[in-house]
Amino acid sequence: ELGISHLKSGLINESVNRYSQVIPDLSFSSFLEKYNSHIMKGVIIFLFMILIIVLVYNHSLNKEKRKVIAARERALMAASDARTDSLTGARNRRAFYEVLEDLNNAGKHFVVGFLDVDDFKEFNNRYGHETGDQVLRFMVKTLQYAFPECFIGRFGGDEFVLISEKDLDIVKRQSEDFLRLIKDGIVVRETGIRVSVGSSIGLVQITRKVPDIRDIQNQADIAMYRAKRMGKNRVFVGS
Image 1 (cartoon, rainbow, N blue to C red):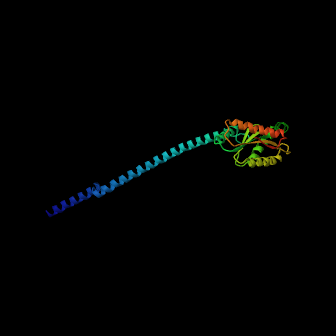
Image 2 (image 1 turned 90 degrees about the horizontal axis):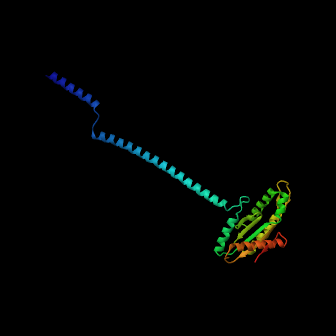
Image 3 (image 1 turned 45 degrees about the vertical axis):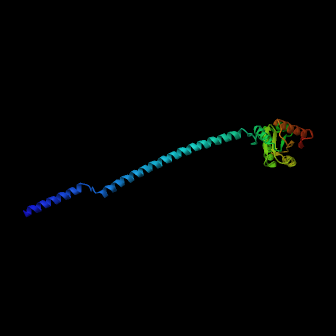
């Protein structure tokens, strides 16, 4: 009986050991550990997906922003081109009228100047249109230097305009300095010959609001032609 008892005990222990290797540990702590492991994996995958979504969204948003900014820049460039003379880079007639109207509506005191290149037609015919264009660009560059912080525009052909909020005496002195600067002229690219340039300048001072801004233009234009009749290459101040 004792032998049989030992045999049974051995068989039972062997069976327990065998099943313990096959059946997993079903303790609560083991279950919780495995459960937490699965949760953490799920959280990591979820956060990774959120990160991808955020990155894709930001990329899409930045792309749309870039499109909006590019469209805005194109609109600004188009507006600028519409108010810029393509040959000289100066402001054009449209821009001149806009600035003139704003100043006039504000009731500010300002000076308007009209000027052109003396005998430009003969000069253009003699030296060619390319040299004529060179002269026009030279005029704008020198005007911008002689009249800092002033509106400088090409009205058309060889006519230019300026608007300044400085005192008339200052603008007149700047105009005389401008005439001295352009006297040295340019060097014609094709021949290397230096050619002197002259200009007739008409100035008018505006001290009150004018019903029609074209009256200001006409006054400045008349003053310019008075300068021409007085011998050209000079400044005339209109009333």
